[in-house]
Length: 197
Ligand SMILES: O=C(O)c1ccccc1NCC(=O)[C@H](O)[C@H](O)COP(=O)(O)O
Image 1: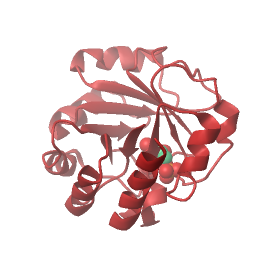
Image 2: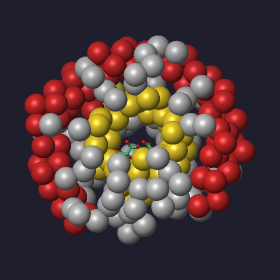
Image 3: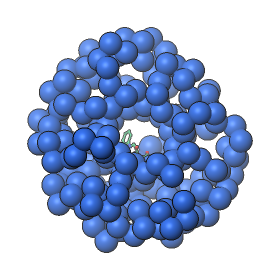
Image 4: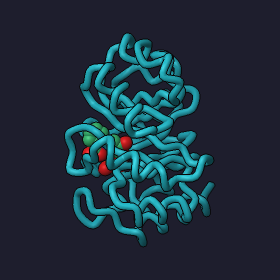
């Protein structure tokens, strides 16, 4: 089971996620309580070993702005959240980054339909920590797709059983308040997923 821990902003929390075995780490570079500048994301990404994918998270920005932030931060993945048109992914293809499309369950759920490398199926309100009807997407997405939206150490086993994703993505569920990550919850999330994987 692939695990992405999203919305990190502190070196201590990056180190915890890496040590606990995260496959990918997300830095939010769009409007959010978790927002970091591309320069801050660069400092954090420099702490991450090569086997862990660093992902910059964007929503609604023009591809030129995404490109600039990706180059400044040095992230190896770019996540476009929400209903970005296919052309935004096409415009970023030559960056050579892992392209991640993050959408709600009403969107096209075929990973690769927008030339992306990974798909995230999320709650309607990204980063809200709101659980949703995970079972409703079971069998619908294809390819390498992650389940997100309201996951916590306490419910991730149930969510994985309900939706049968290839991976999981969490942010609020490993925080004590919006934007404040908790090392113990990061470890608990990864331990729980690894036990069940
Ligand atoms: O986290 C945010 O604040 C955010 C803001 C705008 C676009 C995307 C955002 N997060 C993207 C993620 O990948 C989250 O991990 C995902 O939405 C799950 O969030 P949560 O329900 O808080 O676990």
